[in-house]
Length: 596
Image (cartoon, rainbow, N blue to C red; front, side, top):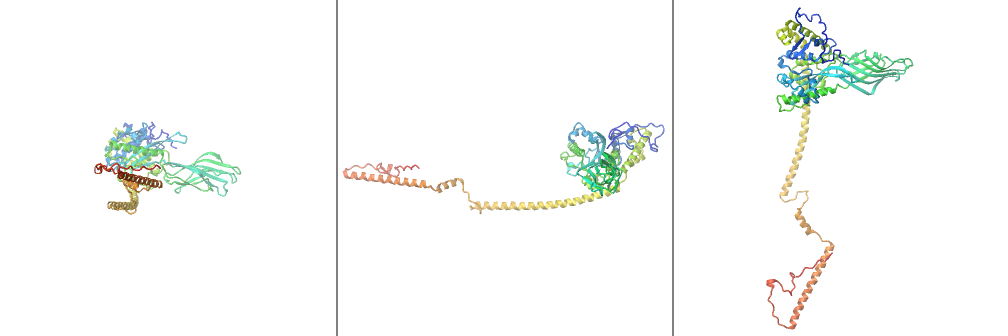
């Protein structure tokens, strides 16, 4: 889809410079020595680079760097120091990913000195955006190289990652790609054929201005040969796209009573201003049921996601090393990546001019305006006055003319230093400025006003949503506080009752372990066997005491009968207790417990 007859975008080639048009070299004086190259602030282009401004040619990195640096010098009304867009070079991203770097932080060492060349660094307060041209290597369905393609990654409000402000990586691609596989396929039929002549659409894809429809048409021959697919047309936004390019794998038209079948693709070239995602296919010369093809919105490609990730990592590392406030952490994932729905190019060679035009227009925007764009929705961004193919063609012609004039001026002055030429020739300076930009203040002011209204409306909705959420959170917190106070009050009352020695209502008494053990021993009821054993022991003890009393009486009786006067021994009751002849409770043994 993207042939590169001169070697591909982004590569210098030794092509012959086309013959100058009449009037382009009017200032070239006869006999003057022509200059081989033009230089401006370390950016240089030669005759071969200038040849890339011709029809059917791609812009390369040298032309992008040269014109972008000229734009930063001439376009900002406050001078070069007030340029709102930072630019590090067309091959910056390629160098960032070199040496097998897996992230922006790792790749930072490959370009760590690039931002130091900018006065004030990459995070200078004047910078509201960071322009990163991307040169993508394309491949076809078989994996073969299919040329190169330029698109722009515009980082809006790059300082916002460290300040908690909205940040966005906006991908501006004039050759956007998307596809949709239809399973089951969309079907239609020829009117009056009772489904004997059918049409199936199995896939639809878009690559910039091209819409490719994969189809299959069949017929049984009962109504003659199949209608030819070359008469098909595609309708979008009220614009009819006719004369598709046909690629057939099966080409059998059929005839009367002879079945036919067509299978292949129909490639329609769109007007670059068509922005719709809905297309209506009218197959053949007519008579078939129209089939509506609905694309999903443009989504980020794998490379676009990688660009957002690498650039975010690079900015985080650059802030950590050279940022104005290194104590703050840069959130590399804070930037949202989005695809802006821009006008699509209508050829295969102007992608670089689209990138340059978008960068030059951003230089004429106000800093606050660029920061506000980071909060805009894709729907609002779609209404922005993006460059059209017609404007791109006009810009390319102006650039070709001014380069011819600069080479002529260099030959007259004997120098290729463009900065010196512009300082010495005010008319030349004005001509270069006109070739780079137009006055668009009214158009930009109108869109800025619309953007401000949209952001204000979103802010009102956001504040209303935040107020509603805050109200709900306050209600939840009030219920939590009420529950907490209720529990604290219950705990306070329970503590007061405990200190007064009263049991709180509804609670059970839980005696201490030491007292409970003693009380359990006292309150323990003896079993039936224990009661019987205790009664037997008490009976045996009473019998023993009766026997001892009888024995004592017998001893006293015997002494009286013999009449022997015995001298009583001194009493020991007072000293050592009762006599050995007199039983006492203290000397009697406790009866033995009977075994169970």
